[in-house]
Length: 208
Image (cartoon, rainbow, N blue to C red):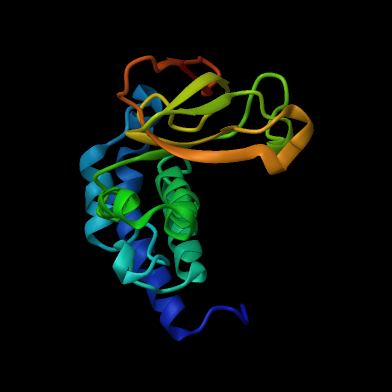
């Protein structure tokens, strides 16, 4: 018996399990073969409240807490681990944006995220420093009212199909380590962004 799972969470897990068994599992092999995100299925997950439910209602979620997001993710992953990255990335990016983003900027994106209408990637890993946030080399510079992003990221989950990405980059000096790092929400259709899918199931995004 899991002491962290109460009756409500157990019922939620069962609800998610039925959905995963009936709707997610049947298309697993085809999605694994084509590696194309089923947008209709993602929207269905959003309609059922399965995407970032821990976010507040003001941010498009249900305020159910992180454990609720965890049990849903676990059940989706039983049926299709790759598809469950929709849940994982939504919770990770959703919390970053909800806690640190400017409300007028992130609100429309979070609404799309929780409804299953947008997929977010997280761009942290780089060729030289891996996932060490204190060793980032991608530069973020503010020029007037614009931000210029110049550098390379590697192994970004879902980068080839994401609608936006939370991109971590350096605003300070190399010596400032993690204190000179910030993050931007970057729509992936902006000019200068290129994305390449690798056969090893990793993706690379390059921004200028």
